[in-house]
Image (tube, rainbow, N blue to C red; front, side, top):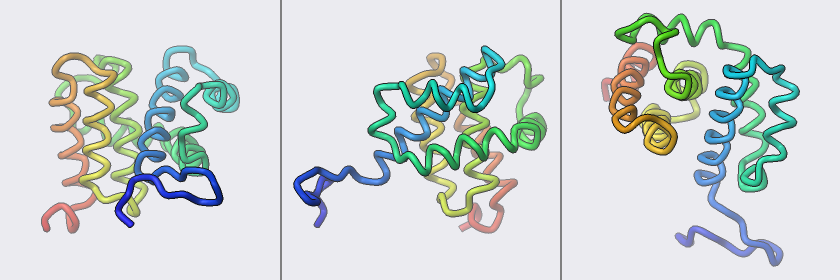
Length: 155
């Protein structure tokens, strides 16, 4: 059954990949919002539940990813800082947020293939970043993958 949508008890079921993409997008918005407003995670989560796209997301994955990124912010920023060509506070806030989300998947979630994590970060940068921001994101995430997943990366 290669159809993107399948009927399950009268309701259409979306592919998990699309749901996860929406989850990543919502986590990006949440991380960005918390960076800009210095908001509490609980409040950011409640705000995201009001987002019209929330119903399209994979809710369990959204919660795990948001909690994971939030719990590992310091470690993520330390890793990102060793790779980028400028001070971390010189990154645009949206690029910084994308790097946090995608780097989390690369470093801490081995269930996500590294190419998927990189591609999803690049796609988010194309949607939300500057005109050539996706190229920068791609280069940085490539280096994160080489560092965090050297065995998988070499194949």
